[in-house]
Image 1 (tube, rainbow, N blue to C red):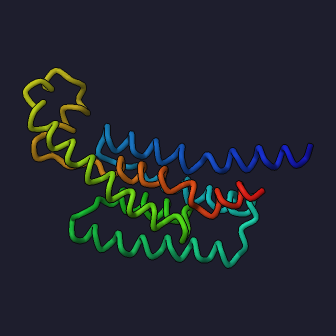
Image 2: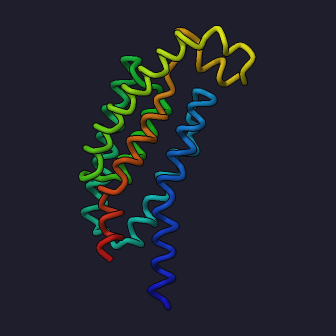
Length: 175
């Protein structure tokens, strides 16, 4: 019975990443902002999840190193005005959860999803702009011809695609 309780706890902790990246993607889509509390909760939630799944301290250290590297690269992209600050923090927090094995898949999936999403949004802006005026405010803002692209949507998609390859999920599946 105790094993079942631990497994339920592990599942609840494993749900933190998917739930919060989905919320981040939706918040970015509807407000063009990713609140800091989402990245903060991702960072705070990682440690109990890692401990509950039995990750070794060295593995946790690798996860931290990957997250710091992602943050530094993201800061460079922010400085070049390629990503927003919320995007950078969300990517670093996701990399903390995904570790070395999941982060490569994450970056690739985020780039592909981001490219496809950006293309679809640009086409939609060109074709649907005349019909959007009566829509909700967030949709009007999203369809601005030269408006920002909410890249949190792509980051969320990339994290969800990479999640099965993460050391945390692999540890859970290994039992």
